[in-house]
Length: 130
Image (cartoon, rainbow, N blue to C red; front, side, top):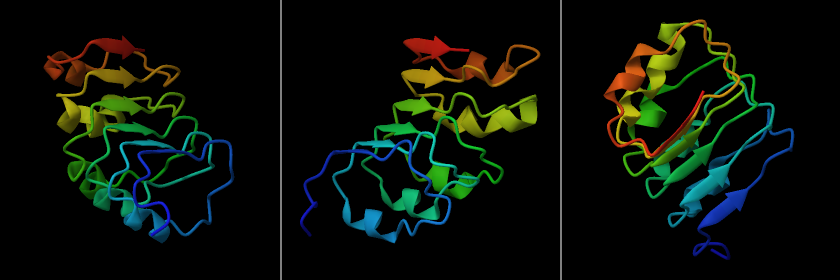
């Protein structure tokens, strides 16, 4: 458990499309995780075990499969960066509705054609990027 005390992990700009994320389970104290631009087409299921996460960056990934069960487990999440994922309709962006307690949310460059209605529920937002 060499990295048991690790609180921040930045793995961005790596092709992790075929990576085994199982070792992340050991990072019980992880508060910030960046998997930005890692060529991920799915939410790694292991994320649900990182319950201390406060900040998650999944921006610039071709995410095709949104795993709602994973997101549901991240009750401490306050900052969610998912910009440049090309959400085009309300159904796509509805994944974030359970994060209405988030303080920072970045949905920039997601190709919205109208304001996502779910954002009206985000009463704790301090920073919003569209």
